[in-house]
Image: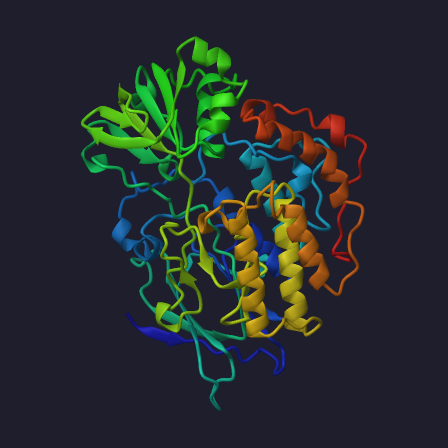
Length: 485
């Protein structure tokens, strides 16, 4: 491949140059807040904005030529994981960005298409399209030594996602990098004994676009996993009026590392009594042909296995030899990397910011936006990060506290209702900022969050989908602005 080096003669001396990797939620909010204080470029591997909210029929199962897709060759998977009929699982206020509000008639729980339209309106409102380079896959990020010819700190290489259309490698140089490539695209697939010899059909949720009758009708379906997408499958097949007639499984089985919440859920009692659903404890011990043996020594004949086992962090463009970040080697399967200070600042290279790697937060988009505002303040010199040793000490203390609650590092970026909560994390972010704190908007969501949390603790995911948020949020003006943190 030919290498082309781009130099930006229009960039004023002294103006920081920032690369933003990804044009999903965190990438677009980053662009909005940084465009007026820096020269920015957003690299998006797909042909349009939206990140994980951009629907496509393409998957690894039907792509015409995976070898020509630069993203696939780099990550080992395609980007999109969005399936048909997906509904958001938090109210619209928790997916509201500063100075950009949902329409009054937008339902509290939205179809994915409605949220994508909200994203498009945001891009138009803040004129962000001009900063985005579409169909560009970032393949390399390296720290550079400063020279007379180049004072920028990082070299980024990127290529056209479809290498058949264009084969050249483009090099560009930056002072800061916002890593916003998301964490819902590289599937985490457990390795069970005999898995590769399963005689039926198996797939990860990442590959699912719509439930096809040939894969589900009159089949014994095993769902591996017990988090959001696993519940979505059960709800779509057995509860939702607009989707439950799309396929007709013979019986659904669910297993996971832990089935405690599933076992005590009130939501599934009736369908268990009707023999439509059975919870199998102990996960999968072994697969033999169509036979699946579980950890409780029971055995079932299974036709279709769906892995609703989540996703792992993946940054294959970061040069591993420079050890900017490293992945944990203690069996977390891509669920922990670091070292990061406050779950966002790269300790080994503080000019790199990892936005949106935290999970399980009700006010999730507001938390992403607060991370971005902190990164902006660092770039502007309004706040100064602690020394490297101080950040490492803080991280060590955070990990020690995390492990006190019996959680291994695979749960580090998820918040623990019994330990370090997302509210605690937001307070820590507030302690860093030089901005005035927003004391009204986010606190208004507390009653709705408490109601949702109680249902989560009880394992009642169907009831969560049916919460009447109007009881908690009607009449509340929720309009966070960029003038406060």
